[in-house]
Length: 171
Image (tube, one colour):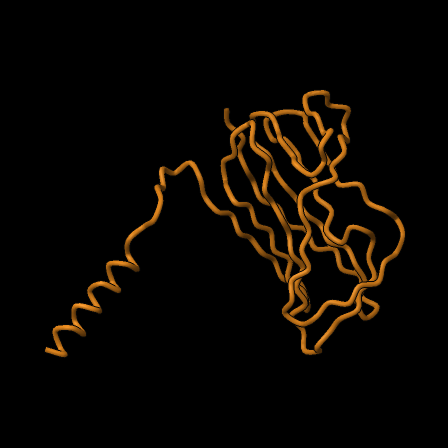
C-alpha cells in the first residue's frame, strides 16, 4: 500500500513539474544575458523579447562582484550602468544621461547592484518618440538594440563592460 502511495505521489510530482501554467504562444519570451570580466559580472534582463507599441519596456541590468574579497570598492560615474537604445530598422537613438561626477560605491560579494532602463534622452534629434515620463519608456514599432555599459575603476584597473540585447516592438 505504501509503495502505491509513493508511486502515485511521484506521478503527481512529475505531472506538476511538466505542466505549464499560462499560455506560451511564442509572442513573449524572457531575455537574460550576462558577460564576465575579471572579478565582475554584468547581466541584463528583459521580461519579453517582443513588446507591444503601447506598453512600457521592462529592462534592467545588474553588476555583481564575484571576486575573493567580501566587498569591492569601485569609482564610477552616475549612473553606474547607463543604457543606449538604438533602433536597428530606423533612426531612433536614446541614451541615459550621465553625470560626470565620480562616485564611490561598495559592492558586496555576490550581491546585485541593479539599474533600470529609465531617464533616457533623445541623442539624434528624433521626434518620433515622447520621453515626457522617463520612468516608462514606450517605443514605436521596430527592432532595437539595448546596450548597457558599465565603466568603473577597481584596484587601479579601469573596466568598461558592454552588453547588448535585441528586442522587437509590434503593434
